Length: 382
Ligand SMILES: O=C(O)CCC(=O)C(=O)O
Image (cartoon, rainbow, N blue to C red; front, side, top):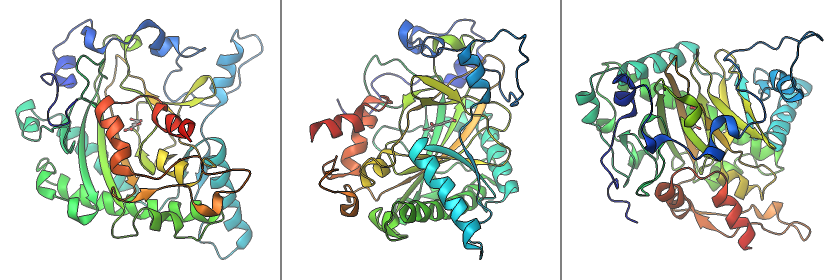
């Protein structure tokens, strides 16, 4: 399998959706057992359900009931740098618990301007709403993924996801090339740069909290990723068009993120992200102006599985398209990543052998999203 070119002509999902088709092409149809409604034991909830209590006379299954009331933890970061050690420790404790028990959480009072979040999302939506020819100037290839894309993985005949995306690099500086960022709408490049700066800074703060919570030096994880000037950071902006048959396909198939940590700005109007919790899939209810943080496979490896990456997926709907901005905070790609020796003991030997991120991500680049297959297969080899 070669990573030089896409194995089939690329079809833009947005163009398909806008062509007004009433059934989706077979390339996007998942086998029966893998469809959204067949992998959950409860119906897909409506977006933005509030956490109200059901009356006793309402007939809901236990799963419905549980599901209505479950959301990933929401953590207020206001007191991270408080003078008051009790308030500070409370926040650190909440982050640690969310990392151990969920692998996913939302943060508010995170220090990134709400205006900037809003304008980034709106400008990216405008980008996707430009005529196709303008976007095609940025068409990407599987060698670097940079630019406008419509599939992950290069397996010929693979079932595809119902989404398009734009992928670009912020860090390290050697990979940052603004000429490859969209030149329209006019202010987008400037806003992309500001957004990256703010969110990368937030990522550094969270990485520091995770290091301290794991009992490591505060800059342990950042240094393991290559230090402030060499850490990797890239952005994938996902566009999920309306879908006439949302029960047959995914906007993004189940996967864990191969990198270090992801900082996601979800759509402000449309939900769609689902997180695995045991045998169930929890639909995340985004809190206004929050970011969603999740642990990637590299932190699972570095923490010797004290923190675990968690499978997630995106469902689509027939009424509204959806935009999300995923910033991936990753190790420099040629560094060896392995469990921190401070976290390896006789009772808990190293679960993973050293591997560079370059070697690691080749798997998803060839095969596309594959649940947690890769990190689990690594652990079972040792
Ligand atoms: O769109 C979303 O909510 C999640 C996106 C995601 O999981 C990804 O880009 O890896």
